[in-house]
Image (cartoon, rainbow, N blue to C red; front, side):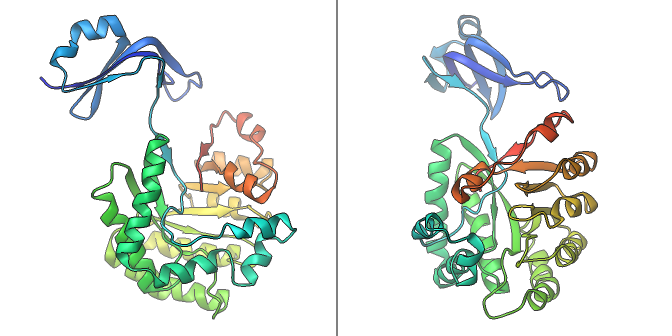
Length: 318
């Protein structure tokens, strides 16, 4: 028998007892045994290491003075990108809004230009670099979106790079198609919506790599009706809906998420208690992205409406 033993942890977090229990269960002065990738035993370190001697273990991790907890599942990331937009923080501090920067060709559109010019190897190297940092900080699974292509070829290249990196990197990746991330600077939102529906989604379905279809439902980006069309056609192609909702204005993205039974509605900075009720009643996972509110110097998503409904939101990095 071969196994890995993590021993003498100050605390091991094992999670709630069941889905109706919000209290974390913990073990103190504990050890964890992993066999063939599965946790097979957790308990007092002295007891566990007697049953599973350190001398017989393949791998031994001394967790003295440390806490052992489940890996972080980061359910909303744009980890595949190249380039740098750090000076845009200075512009925001000077009073410029996200929408103003985007309208002048910055923000997402600037990264789009960089990604289109990058080779697949450059994209893969950057993704691995970002995942290395995430892994060191405890992330073991990450959703990664396309959305910096805004054309069929580059969106497919991004999904292929995500798949390629997933084959070799320890962090497990879940690919999301997000051609509806912004409107290209050479088109209109309606024309681009039609191209997503008629060109990109069929090509993504043929490629067979993406699991989700996401859309930025926001003022001056994609309307509720355009978002509905994209997500509905995505469902027809076998892609589960996700949605960026109510980040800058309460446009109706939360209600749309409930309507299409989206896997999640993310951001929710402007959502109301009514929106929260719709999401919870429809089984949509509310996803909070506090890093976004911090970066925009905005209000954080209100948690009270979800606490009142005994719903625990997901949290992700964006």
